Each structure stands twice: as structure tokens, then as C-alpha cells.
Length: 602
Image (cartoon, rainbow, N blue to C red; front, side, top):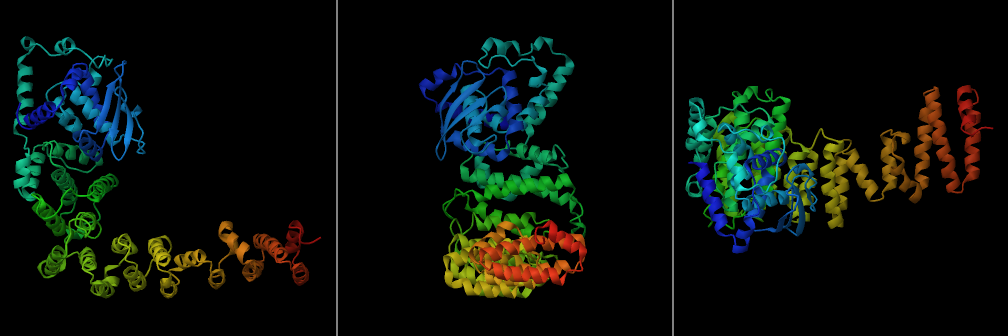
């Protein structure tokens, strides 16, 4: 057996050499027949995603699985897995969906994956095959082995002895010429599938990794359009590698995701002028899933200390890879631009592996791209990338000037500013964050309501941490009216500025009945007199409709007014008002009827 199978065998041998004498005795009781092993592979392929498997493998490799035991029924494995704390795990080998873990995942989790890998090791089964279950099943199918469902209808005991396993091996004497041909065909691809060793991954540039990915993909000729196809290709790429140091594994997994992502985007975007039209529903779901996996990976801490690491060059090549694709990406896609930003926000941030020297170098490369790419330059991500680097270098004025100059042409959105503002919030640089909010708020033209909500949330945090910034917030939000109305209202309510809040509602012609009662409760409690003109104005507006619905709404508000006057102990004034109101509208018979129904007229 050659290729990846040799790597798997060597890794299992290395792991087994580390097992203590008592554990070797334990292994004799943990055995899986071929049918049970295939059923387990199928279950893992169906229940676990790639990132969960990768993280589970790390726990397994670090020896975090403790006190593993197989129950007498042969169908349940109990284990304790040490992560940020100790978790109790129960794995149902017959139905993985029924497995349980004490963690909060509520799904197939990393602790279950680690338990299954430890169990597979004790059973003498290849760990790498379990980690790449989809690929393992494909290879088994190519070799002509039946699936678990096609074998005996029952699973049988998982502690099957060697005699049972021996009976499942077909006799060579019974093989026909057709069987021999099928065996030869199935074994041929296995020996020539491209793989990558740890030494090769360390020595080769990431461009060569992608060449090897392409060589392996070229043999299956996939046209990737769905989430399932993307997952299968990703699993096949993961099968190329052996067990790796965590930092190298993070980089390899990221580039596997980038390769699949690029193969989904490029075939459908032969002409940048046609981009944005090709994405069907399932393709869009697949793209979002891949981007989500890549961002999740990038948000984990990179296991690199500094530029002295053997993998530092690969990290820099990763930055180059994402920059090159981000700078020419169509604005309707946003795949590589999002990942480029996440790379610099996480793995290359000042709190991680970033430095001023690195940011200045990257900034020069971005600036040079303008003349190199000309009209093909994707200006929005190019501008935002420079702003992020300038922010890291404390050159805020330059960054904001760039946004002020090009923001309207680029159709700047609140979501584009969120990563930049988030950097300052996480580092608690409140003065700088206040300056950014004040300068960038007026640039967000054409957006309101929920779109501006994150912008308002940043203001709320700044004013909480730095109360002296409150006048700047009010001035900025007022300048942004009427688009900032929702954010302004929320800020007024949060600070108990009910007088201004009521004035805003009346100026905007707001209907009191359209406002949630819970929003008005604090005013009724703290400043009920402010609601009187608000309700009186609305009553007169409803009367002008001169229909039953308008009259009913007016009566509703009149009843609220009656309660407010009673609360303010101004009953006499209420009686004067309601008497004058009834007299003034005495000819409106429909209104008189509604007043009687509402108990306001005897």
C-alpha cells in the first residue's frame, strides 16, 4: 500500500509506540470488525464537520482523552475529555446522533471526535482514516468493499474476535478475472494520488501547495457548485497530509479552504463584467459556508510566536495570496476581501504576530497596486485595507481623510467601518474611537435604522467609558438626522432625555399608538407631563380623518390622557378639557357614539 496509506500507517505506528504497557493490554479488548468500522466511518462523515474533526484531533493528540471505557453492551463508550475544563462524554457507537457531551455545543462536538479517535486507536484502526472519513469511504468504495448497510443487517458485537474478521476476507481462489481487473484499477489511483509530507509543506512555498492541490483535484474533475461537493473536495485535500504541528496544520487547512473557494469563484467569473450574476442559491450557500469556516479558523490564535518560526514565510505568502485576489475581486463577491481583513485583524494584528515594520511594508505594496492594476483595481477593499494599516500605525488622520475623499464614490456602508472601529474598542482606545465616530458618521449617507445600529452601539460604549464625549455624540447624531433618527432616539432614551425624545416624536409626526407601550412606560413613570402634548396632538390628527377608525384611535388616546391627568392630580383640568372637546364635536354623531362606548360620555 503506497501514498497516503503509508503515511497513515506510519503515524498510527508512532502513536502506538507511545502507549503504555497497561494500555496495550487494554487494546486487546477493543476491537472493531470491518462492518462496525465502516459504520463508524459513515457516521462520522455524516455528523462531524471538518473543523470539529481538526480540533478534536488536537485534543486527542495532546492526550486529553482520559478514563475511556467501553460498556458491557459494546455499544457505548464513556470518556472524560480535558479541554478548558473536564467534560463527560458518552458516545453511542450504534447511533452517533444519540451521543452526549457535557459541553454547550448541543451537537457533534470536538470532545466526541477526540473520544472516537482514542477509541479507534485502541481498536487498532487508522486515526487518519477517521479524521478523513469521507475520503476513507471513497477509497473503500473504489476498492469494491460493500458499505455497512449492505453487510449483515445487524452490527454485531464491536468486540468481534479475529475469527469474525477473518471470515469477512474473500478467498483469493474465488476471484474471477473481472475481480482482478477491478482490484488493479482500484489500487492504481491510490499509489499516484499526490500527497504532501511535513517536510515538503515546510520547504515548499504555498504556491506549490496549490499546485499539488490542483494535481489531486485534476484526477476527479469536479465542478464545485454545492456545499456537499465543496466539503468532499476539502476532505480529499485534508487526506493529502500527515499529522502536522498545529501552526502548520492551521496554515494548511486555511489554504485548502482557499483553494476550494477559488475553484468555486473562478469558473463562474471568467469576465469580471459578468460577475455577480452567476451565483445560484446552493452555490451562494456553499460560498458562505467556506468563508465561515475560513474566518472561524482565522479567529483562532495562530500558533506562531514571531518571524523566527519555520512557518513565518508561509504566513507572509498567505498574506500575499489574499492581497492579490482581494485587489481584483469583484465587489459583488467579497470573498477574499473578507478573509484578507480577518487575517490582518487576527493572525497579523498588533496583539498577535503583527508589527509596525510589517504594516509599513504591506501599506507600500497596497499603494503600489494602484498604478500596477489601474482600472481593474477593486477600490473599496483596497481603501479599507490601507485604512486598517494606517489605524495600526496610529495615522488616523490619513485614514479618515482617505475615507472622506473616496467614501461617497465607494458607497461606504456602516458594516465596512465596523472592523476598524472594533479594533479601537477591543484595545479600549476611547479617545481615538470617539474621534473616528465623529468623523465617519456624516459619511454614512443613505443608511438608517438597523443598518446604523452597530454605529450607535459604538457610541453607547464610548460615552459609558468616557462621559465627557457625550456632547460630541449628540452633535454628531443631530447632524446625521433624519437618517440617524433610530440611533438618536435610542441614545436619548438610554440617557433619560425624555424632553428631547418627545420633541423628536412630535416633529416627525410620530403616532403614539405605533410606539411600543414598554417604550413609553419609563416616561409615564419619570415625566408623565411630557406625554400630554404628544397625545393631544395625535388626538386632533385622528379627528381630521373623519372616519370610524380615526375616532376609535382618538378615544384610545383620550383614555390614556384621562389616566395621565389623574396621575398628575389634575382632574379638574381634565373635566374642563373633555367637556370642551365634546361640545366642540357635538355634531359628529359617529364620534359621539365612540365616546359613549369608551365611557367618556354618559
